[in-house]
Amino acid sequence: MTEKTVQVRRYQLTPGDLPKFLDWWQHTMVPTREAFGYTIEFGVAVHERSEFIWAVSLPLPQDEFLKRDAEWMASDERKRALSTAVPLTKQRVNLVERIR
Image 1 (cartoon, one colour):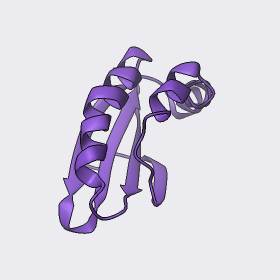
Image 2 (image 1 turned 90 degrees about the vertical axis):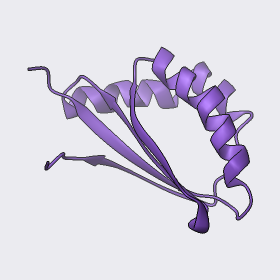
Image 3 (image 1 turned 135 degrees about the vertical axis):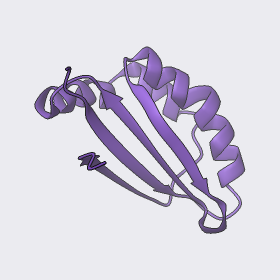
Image 4 (image 1 turned 180 degrees about the vertical axis):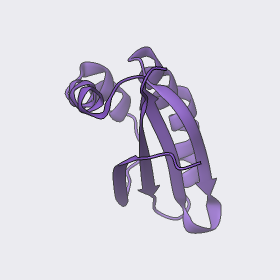
């Protein structure tokens, strides 16, 4: 079985910006991340808190995931996608372990 590393991303947005962010995420970020090799595990919105939580994964051990993620962070693809992004007020990013 191939090892998989999952990263959970939690974003806080300014109240009222979530609908515009969701449109951008679905039409810009998802295809860009998938083209870079990531799998989108899930994306969920907490409307009453203007919060978005999502997870990406790669079929790699954690150390290789971190190297590939550093390539993503420095990539032109990411820069282009973020050029049209809705600003975040706060974000948390963590690697996670699936328990169940």
